[in-house]
Length: 177
Image (cartoon, rainbow, N blue to C red; front, top):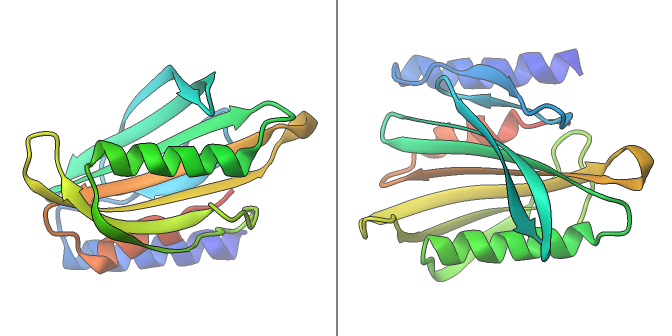
């Protein structure tokens, strides 16, 4: 695990060397075991949101820098909830919120410690920001078994008018459980 951390940090620092506005730092979303890197000091919040039709506590950390907005969201589903169905609904809600156009590009996303679910994916899409400007987004959803039969969920997203692939890769490749 320390080797993965060192590798993720090296990738992020390499990207930061090319982009002085990015100051990568490790972020934990307690009580979730998820660990990630954000390129700026995050604001944090916790709120109740409907996931899969049930009120669910969502822990959020996010920041904006270099023309991009980065966010991490973690939630715990109690035993008996269908994590893959919740991930699918979360994807649909995210794409609808940004008014995604065309067919999003999808690929499996299973970071270290994650479960290989059908909707554990990294998705790239184009759409509109809340003010109507064009926006590119890359987002990922992942899950892993939690204590007592619960399931831990993580959603990571970056929005930008022009998204640099190396910045998005550094962000997503650093995610681990």
